[in-house]
Length: 224
Image 1: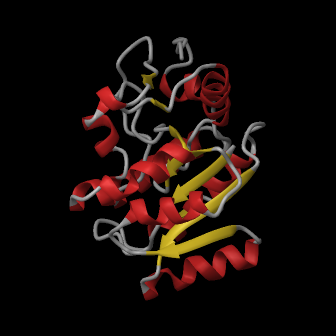
Image 2: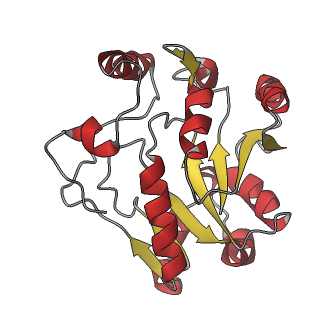
């Protein structure tokens, strides 16, 4: 499975957040590390913009030998289209660049489920019942390439998947839910306050990222 990480440095709420340190690692380092533990992900590509602020991301990718693609700052869907069009993978998985605690076991569970069933889109964001920062969306490349030219609005081009959710009757979509609705829990980083919270969380666990179950409540079992 191909994993595309959507990332940029021009965030207004937390500029250059991809390189903010979370204890001894940057945000982007932590995301790459978490995804790299997946047994099902065969390739990672960082989809960033051609804005000059993201030159640093390009340099990072080159240094770390990570594949990347640079495209429109606001037309994120076009970045995904170009990557999927030039890839040999039949499907791709999208991870947002604000998710340093993404659970690699959750990723593998989603991919296994997707591979065993005849869905075109698999998500946990329609509606979201997992914590923010644990969002996973998988789509068949052929479908995405076919439908891309129909995505017109500024919001849809920036956020990619809302177009498909709004037109759900056209596609075979499966949403995976938590046993309990945990969408009020925030494990992502959008603001400086979020950054401090995640730093404190990792400091309290000796800089080791707990499983998603332990992040929520060590006595709660989540059913995917």
